[in-house]
Length: 333
Image (cartoon, rainbow, N blue to C red; front, side):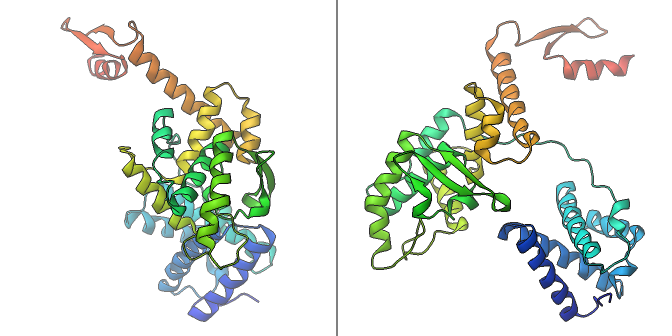
């Protein structure tokens, strides 16, 4: 039976079953589930406003109108692509459950996006950030351990807040992690991270825990598991205190971990394993970062790379890397 979607109750019931599908069959993270459901509610409200009674009525023409409405509302290409990704997953579920007889998403393409290179910190910026917490306080000891661990292991923020005490082997300097799709992997940490973590576990964590009981590795002042949001706020605060003139977020330390490893000559597949990437292509983006960084260093440091001489039709010298000049000369062809 094709569910009606005109009532809020029927829409929520459908989404409830889809959430269970994401969690049980795809082991989707809470973050992924939250984003998908937000995007799907937006889509279902669009259908409801157009008096669409059932999902069987949706075809590629209606989907194109939906995309057009998103663009008219000012959504960026990346946001439209994310919403379409949510719809593709949703329609695969509908087909799998035989809720609909055909999938209109097969006729819809996502917009082409410009590849954005990951932002990362320099070695000096990382050092300043890691020294920012006040380790005379239990919160500072905790945050010092978190920052050291994020940079030393390349963990995602969602992974680090889920860690329990039993996941950590300080002697071997290893941590057992469950990443995306509940896939288990082992990550490593250096001596500075191990020392900071040991200091926090022996002192700061005990003070924060008080009389509470928790297996969580990183806890807040109430003895409860630290949230992603609290960690994000703390890192932004430390970046500001360290005088970093850029927006710093937890994932930037993961980017820095991968970029600095490759800069140091690490094998790409080793970095892939440490990051927990299912596909090598996800890791290869960091090679573009290192190449881009190498180009900037070369252009700024090599005496014969800083300017290129070129002549305009009137014989004037133009200084630059040549790209802008060549584009301007096309006006004279």
